[in-house]
Length: 289
Image 1 (cartoon, rainbow, N blue to C red):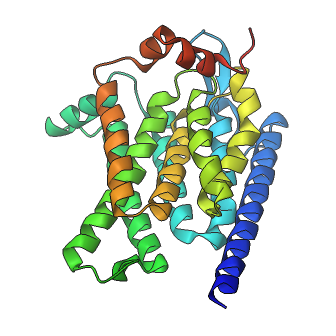
Image 2 (cartoon, helix red, strand yellow):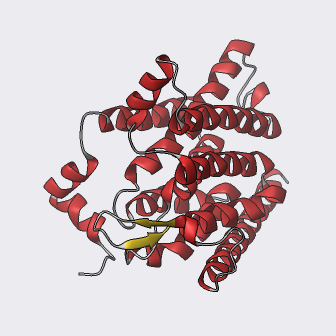
């Protein structure tokens, strides 16, 4: 009876993940279609930018990914919809109104200490706040407050939730740091998100469905995620990982993400990738020659 019940739950989770991926992909295609037809609310011109090669690109890819990912999660996983929506809005503010004078986590936090609130600093605060609420809400829905294998004291539960929240915010920031070359952030996110989605996690399935939809144009350099897309991309994968991992797994994932974010303050990811043959080949895979 127990095995039959577990099999039924697994099948139900699989169906929800498939629905999430399909709906996310469909909505993302719809948003991109509105952009191509010039019918995107607010106009598409405000999302036009110049990429690292000096070619014109559009950031509406990020809008498509964020809206596509959030759409099925509103019903299937409301905490994840909050994390995706909050990080997308924070990213959009930075994309549309932020400057380029202050860069990096250290730069934005330094400006905040001097009394200057940059859009980047505001984004950090929003990512942390929505990540905390989303993770606490998700943990409560999953019954993690009582533990999976026994009773946990209040401090242990709090630390577990805080670790998960930091993982969500850190993954959102890391995805943004990776969004410097066509397809890079999406490849890393999909490499992490697809296995989680196949395991029945709707959040990962949704972001993977939307991500696969926008990947071709990203690889061709026709569009890019921007903060509007990169932040929810990372937040969704981070929350999916937090939903799947136990306390030790969360801590290990957070250590990896935090280490990469801190390393980015001193080391250029692009330089390391270009100097490593395997990483260089993976990074350039799918781009036009």
